[in-house]
Length: 314
Image (cartoon, rainbow, N blue to C red; front, top):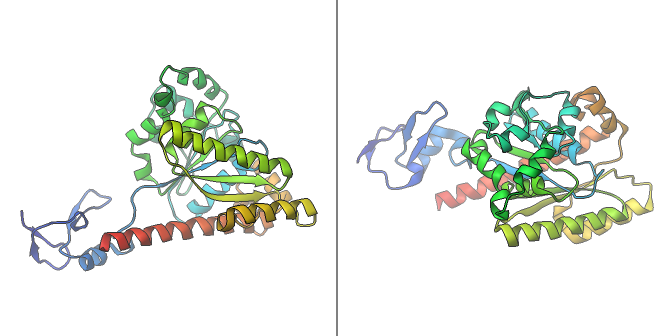
């Protein structure tokens, strides 16, 4: 069936996927060529519509997972990208850090099938949060059903049903310090993992555990998860141990080891004021360091989209 190009008015018969686009207001547009698509949609012409799904994970406690999840999601939101932060830890530290408590939590999404968009709380411009609390612990019992593959994919089914990854640019999951069914659900949904690592010897052991966990997820649940970054935290360059641990991480993970988050009092104080580090102390070392992590995330996203455009053009 012939169509009229929305840009140049030429009549043509669509043959490729790129020749049709549906805009945010549900209008259909047709393009006779790649140039017309670029002219009509600008930078959105070949944008990957699926959000980056990032789990912040380390099975060792006290590594800065929640601090990283909160400030990473808030950082991309401050720059105009839509993000949703999902707390999969029954301790509910995300809600505490931001001073929020939703009527619906992740428990209601998992167990009762509540619409994730309905459970999400808009807390900042471009930033929504699905909180958790102690009720989430009860979901472990509900999830412990006979089929191990099905019980590990409940979160994926809930979020995919409402096309959460189509509504946002970034989905950030704050995982608890354990390997439980909640974390298995988070890893079954995520495409990539960021591992916060404190600069001490035991933290290196924790990284090995995470690597084994990811391999188990791939082997038993047939879901590929990649390690996109290792983030050294609580870094004190004055101590030899911290420098040695950082050197070990850099030697093993190469470019995937990001520049460290320096030991910073302001980072510890920000949750007590119910603020992100960018709101509480924007000039602090903590804000500078997490801004650098946000820069890395946006840069890698841009690289992925460039690759997608090249593939589409080819």
